[in-house]
Length: 261
Image (cartoon, rainbow, N blue to C red):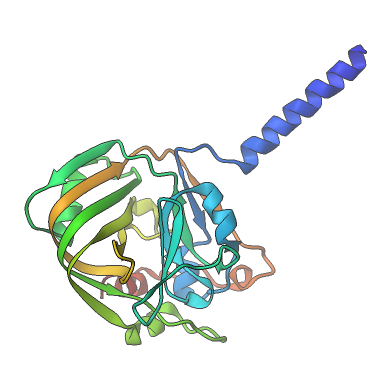
């Protein structure tokens, strides 16, 4: 009986360790693959949306073959394709790159004056001055203008992302109500994620959105989730295109063009 009890205790301890390894705690960020791999043209999906949603209810990314911009808001996925329309993707679809978290805002303030991208960044930097901290943020309200982009689905052999975005569709959304969601990431994530700000948008009526290039918000709220103590990085198998991609190059210049221009 004593030996049996010892065995049961050992099995429970092993199960606890395995669960800790496979189920990260709730105060961090889970990321699929790396931004440099995406910039290099690795667009094969590595994780299903169903699995990805286990790690968070909030996030941004893209879809297999680079088929549009991803918004994960309140646990629901939205896909803004190159036609500018918003779709509800099947949870079996996969992503080559995404960043998600279980968003629990701990800072909230009203926006009473017109604010643009630079003003938003300055305000968040003032509220979270520790530059080496991750920050997830939500801005919901009235927008005079939001300039977004999406990208069309690609075929193999996949071109680099900088080539794709040269002909990307750009949309100007005027006088809309919606939600900006994004992350501010530290400079040390260079190569892994987007250093600084990465922002997507979704209108309340789900008729438009995408990757944000510019915006003017006239009123609303800003919410920040500043408690992110770790980054859980999911790497695709070595047998995939990811494993064979040269990630030694500095792709920061290409990333800057992709994100801002």
